[in-house]
Image: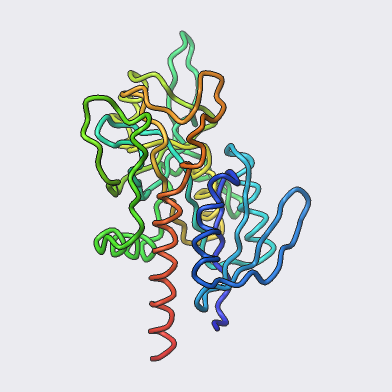
Length: 280
């Protein structure tokens, strides 16, 4: 066992959390208890000496930020991990692929200028009585190094995306891991011109609705953060896990599956690293 503070794991939806929970239970993780605070539930889990706190935030930037502040305040965690589904910003990043966020960008932060043009501005943080601008929230370097090790070893469960709704004309393949910035906002971009513009401006590989908010709270608390996303929709190929009404299709069971598997492999490596430090 470790005396170190827990690591928090935050996802937006139960459909995403179920994949990590299943892997943890299958490998002997122990559920120590469940606690509630207002609308939130926190599962305390021990896995190979790691102390974990799992929580589901709900979708959106405010929900994600609130859940992050709550778990930090209640459990004094030492790091925060996030995973879940996301939409691609490039044609070659296909459904089932995994994106490890090297940075998170709140791309919808800015002002609408006279005439209708949107001017992006850096996120403004208020700390110690002063404001400061932050262009991007960087991933924790040590966590990123572990993710690079996991990706290089290739031992995480890389189950291919079902051929149903696979983009036509592209050979079916196993998931690939990409490293790069993740964009976040309370919007779901489906216009391909807008997607290309976002990628051109920020070099982002994908977008979600939570990661930058979680990363911002972690920065305020000086905590390492990492997000791992898997692609559930690529609008360049009109491939989406969501219907026109914005609700899930029959493929909702795929949401977060590969990101959850990658994060599980990352936890396994963190447990090994802590064991080595303990032995020394």
